[in-house]
Length: 124
Image (cartoon, rainbow, N blue to C red):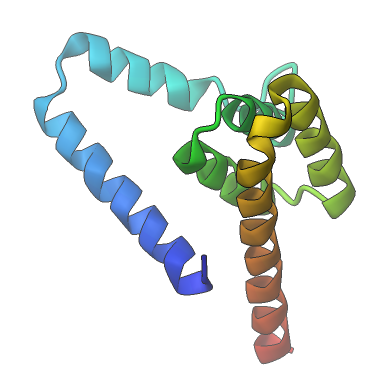
């Protein structure tokens, strides 16, 4: 997925969430609110929680969720070493069937890093 693909993913996700909210009643709205709030800083940092979300998403083989959490991990300044350790846990928990999802996760991670480096070069 290219940088353009990452931006399209974000736009599409927001668009689809808006459609869900158009129809959502109390229970769905509560779920969405809880989903958002559990990632706030608390006893665990947002950074740690995003890595936990990434591990669960990869083990459950949800590519949309993996992409979302990879993007959020990048935004929370997760390091390459931290991503590798988190994804190693997901691989152990999920087994070899998660390898295709692991490949895509690292591809997106690479693209996010390249985008940041290009932005740093343009800014610098």
